Image (cartoon, rainbow, N blue to C red; front, side):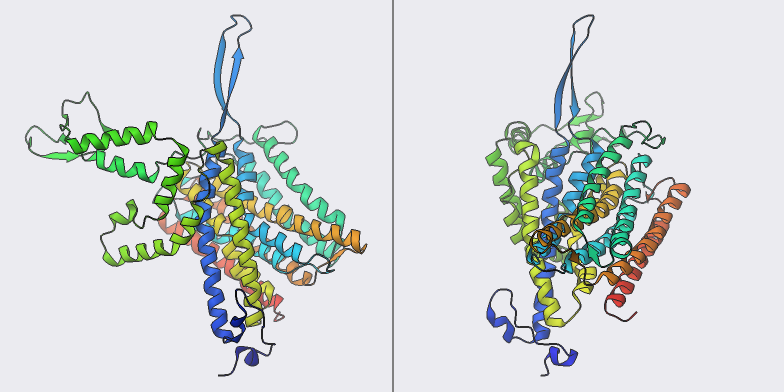
Length: 528
């Protein structure tokens, strides 16, 4: 059998991931195995994102006690206020956290290239490709996530416009660096200015949220929900409540006294003469006692941590129990089996109840960094084995996979929040973070090293392809934002609405992403 390297005209790859015997395998088979490994790492990223999002919720929900004393009556009034501002939380915790795979990958790539005059290609290519994935496919999914007819709009348009401005400016700034001021070269001060602009984004967005005079837009905002996200019942409490719900019945009418209807404990009305509570059996009394013990008393951290391992090893959840189709149930169990090693590994992350979720938040980011490192090595091997340009892989598979946490976080926010602010803010702010931090920090590391060691700037080997991708991204993003504006004018909201139009919007956004990927890949590969 003729090796793949001989057909495509490149040297055989002698590098390996785990053991040296890999190089003896066929190139096609090796590429297949590496792609499988890459896909499994992306599954791991999606699994840790759920834990990351939960820890971030705990961080944002943290409150502090404020005591106010009336100067006349000397009466003390105690109130609790949020420690975190919603806007700052969206830009820093949510956007930075979900972009951490790309940031980690770019930083690892920069460290590996320290001492070289040319920057690595995986980092910038992945971040620009990730920006396109964030803007197009994630918007496409968020539009169709709300239920049929449900509308979710941005409550604070002023903050979104500020975030959008800095997102667009990030890519204009990158183009200026690569093509205008110092073509194909990045200097130390350019890298430093890139990083500092992330701080300017935070200050400007906070000023807009607080409506500071002179620097904020005079745009009124709608009422926002008090909680950043609604509370969710833990899985092991859901089981208890489901069993408790079967212990109560309600007579439907006087004519049908023997007809009863089961209803939820949350809808119980003790003053309703038709409401009857069935006498509890010993088992039901035990369930109620278990519920009280679970919800009120069983808050010991070791117990909660132990429950994480129990939930990680559980193959069936409430959604799976509702499935009547055997094939769907088997597919669900197979998916849970795939996730089981990741879920068991991530169960070692401390519970979110410790230190207001900060320890869990940091541990989640460390796991994300570890997976990103493995993804980097696998991607380099795929490029080596197949001969595909590293930028093409970065624009496509790598960008899509590392953006998976962005997708999961925006989808969760679009499902659970009453407004579209965090779902859309995560997209726009992640794009800003990708440039200001994801490209700025790695370039700052390499430019600083080159300046100290060689007194030389950092050179960009494929600057032309990267600049072309920025132009394509900018043009297609105008079409994406225009559609969101039209939806706001016509339907009154950016997300949801009539199902037909939601799916048409989804298809249009996906088309824009395909256009970006195809044109960028053709340019980097030298076809255009």
